[in-house]
Each structure stands twice: as structure tokens, then as C-alpha cells.
Amino acid sequence: MALRFYNTLSQQVEEFAPANENTVRMYTCGPTVYDFAHIGNFRSFTFIDILRRALRSHGFALDHVMNITDVDDKIIRNAVAQHKSLEDYTAAYSRAFLQDCAALRLERPERLTPATEHIPDMVAAIQQLTAGQHTYTSDGSVYFRISTFPGYGKLSHNDFSGNLAGARVDLDEYEKADARDFALWKAPKEGEPAWQTAIGPGRPGWHIECSVMAIKYLGATLDIHAGGIDLVFPHHENEIAQSESLTGKPFSRFWLHAEFLMVEGQKMSKSLGNYYTLRDLLDRGYQPEAIRYLLASVPYRKQLNFTFDGLKSAATAIDRLRNLKLRLETDHFPEGANEQLSTRTKAAGKAFHDSLDDDLNTAEALAAVFEFVRDANSAMDSGEFRAGNAGEALGFLAQFDSIFDVLAPSARGHAIADAEVEARIGERAAAKKARDFARADQIREQLLEQGIILEDTKAGVRWKRK
Ligand code: AMP
Ligand code: ZN
Image (cartoon, rainbow, N blue to C red; front, top):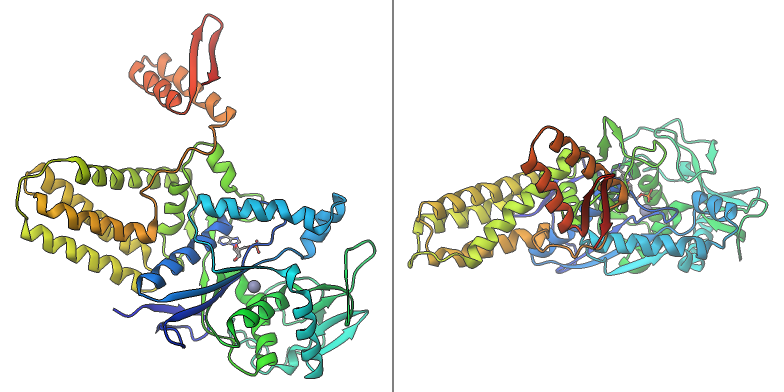
């Protein structure tokens, strides 16, 4: 079946194929490296990873560029406050981001582009926009005049007519439905780092970096541009205005946007303080593949509510799949092949791929997988599963894993945190008090597996790491 995506630009589900031959030219907005990324950010990046893998499973090659925003308002504020250079400040968070991506098994884009390595390209683009009368200068900053771009609003489907003149904004991020002339180049304020360039001292605005790096590496028209839903306006709207004013061509054929990871009805975000970083969750003893599974399990255009119960269910789901795989690899089945089961396995494979083709419907794809798991397990229990069925069943699990990538266990990188150990000891004490000794022993065993040794002393429980 053809691969179909919901295109934010057309507001329609459309069949996808790359414009030129077999290679998908894709640009996705990367992280702003001013702090550790939280798992809300990683919902968007996990969606991108599933997108990459689904495109490849259709036989397409990928040319995917992702930027690293290593200069922006927040970075400058924090670096100045800590008396650090921009490079020193951002290097640690860039590294942490890549480590987190690796832990979540997110494939590396073909090219990662730090904004600060492209300042001359951005200056040249701003000069070209100025030559085309799309800009004006005020107090040393250069602004894009949105009234010079008739299509402004076409991605976010805002009608800005009659509202395009005059007001301007210096911030990189600003409110929806506020059509403002935005900064392409920002003059430095007192004490701020700046580049000395032909358009004066300063630094680029956030929006210009993506336009410039996308066009430089992928050409005037991309096949896919993607990111989180909050980027539709103003970021992507502004990218379109800049890019199409520069090239005169449509900037991207497809625009894909991932919905938010939520916590109790609100977007997970730094500013609300309702966030967990990947490290927070690993320190609590959760496996990265359970986090990956959870983030991937809800279709990207639906909001996903983060809960610890959800994370535990993700871990249980992975266990079921691993158990089936182990059984398929180690059990001895009667000779022959069960044709009916064989047909079911093929149908499960088709349902899995058809669901992903349908705008990456990961929830339906997983439903097909678990229906198959149930059928396979019950066929094994009843003796109907035959030796000849094992290969195709393992093949189906491999197809699943080429997209979801959760079957191989991660090496235990992070030790269980002290607070988590204490909490488990508390649980064990409560179990003992309730005379549930089996449960108390189970907790001791589980902690031992995580390298924690408990000693019951007269003074209470002591613990140490192995
Ligand atoms: P930033 O590092 O702030 O530039 O954000 C990186 C990416 O994370 C962007 O694509 C955002 O849209 C995305 N993002 C931020 N918060 C969330 C959230 N709660 N759920 C999903 N994506 C998010
Ligand atoms: Zn961007």
C-alpha cells in the first residue's frame, strides 16, 4: 500500500513519494541545547525516528538534515549568567542530547548542522533578502517584513490579512496569531556575545538558521519538513516566508507535526516544571526501550498522556514480546508447518505495514503485533505450533523490531538511584508488616538484580551496592 501522511500545509492526507528518484530529502528541527532535553522533546524526536524507519521500509533512501540550535535567547542568557563562552556552555548539552538519542535508539540523521557553523551562510541569505526588499533595519537589528510575503499564514491557516503591517518582535518565540515582523539578525545587547559581519555585529534569529541550512544541504524544495506541533507558528511559518522569498519555490512538499506529550492535561515543558528528562527516568530504574516504546505507541498526531503506569505497561508489553521471541528460539516444536497459522502470520505482517502506511498509525500496528502474539502463544500451548512456523514468526518480530526497536535489552547504563532504593526498602517493610513475605523476598531479589544488597540488622535495614 502507498505511504500516506497528513500534510499540515494542505490539511489533507496525501500519498507520499520523494520528488526526485528514490531519496527522501528531509529536514527536521533539532534541539536547542540550553539544557537537557526532556521526554516531551523526545516524543517529537522519537516520531522522527519512526518516520525515518517507515520511509526506509518502503525502500526509500534518506537524506535527512537536523539542526542543533546552539545560539538563541535562552542559551545566551544562561551562558552569560555562568560566565561561559557559548561553545563551552552548549558543548555539554549537545553531547548529552546525542547520548540520550543513542539510549533511545534514535537513528542519527545523515547530517547534523550546528547553527554557529553556518553564520556566513545566514549573513549571505539576509543580504539577499535585503536586496529583494524583504527586510528593514532598526537599531542594528534586521527584520523580515512579513507584508512582503503574500503567502504568510498558509501553513498555520491563519488569516493575517489586514494584520501584516508594522508590529515587530525581537523574541525567537512568541504568541500564536500574532503576525509580527521577526528578527533575522539581532544586534547585541550590552555584554552579549556577537559575530562581526558585513551586516553588522550580532547573531542570527532562530528562524533563519533552519531556512539556510535546509536549502544549503537539501535544495530549494524539500520532500518533508517535520517537527513538534508548537513549531507550526511562528517558526515554520517564518521559515516558509524566508525560504520562498529567497528561492521563489515552494519550500517543502510535506509538513508533518507531532502532537505533545502531556502531563495531567498540560504540555510537558520546561517552563511549567512538569517534566522528566531521560536521565531522571533512567535513574529511577526504567529501561530506555520502555520509554521509547511508550513514546512511539500513540500515533504522532494524538496527544500522549505521560504516566508511570503507562511506562510500566510499556515494559510489560516488551517483556511479552521478548518472551515470545525466546520461546520461538528455544522451544522444540513438532515437525511440519501449520498452514492456518502461516496465513495468520502473513496477515499480521500486512496489517502491521498497512497501519504504518496510514499516517504512521503505530497504535494499530501494535494491535496487529499483539493479536499475533496471542495467537502464537496459544498455538504453542495447544501443540498446534509447528517447527515450520518458527522462522516466519521470528521474521515478523524482526519486521516489527526494525521500526520499534525494543527487543534487544539495553546494557544497564544507569544505576538505580538512592531514593529509589529507599523507596523499595519502604515497600518491603510494608510488605513484611502485612506478613506478605513472598512480596518482601521478591523486592529483595529485584534489588539484588539491580546490584543492591540488603542486610537486615537490629538497627533496621542497611543496604550497599555490589
Ligand atoms: P526545543 O529544544 O525547545 O527547540 O524543542 C525541541 C523539540 O521538542 C521541538 O520540535 C518541540 O516541538 C518539541 N517539544 C517540546 N515540548 C514537547 C512536548 N511536550 N511534546 C512533544 N514535543 C515537544
Ligand atoms: Zn527549525
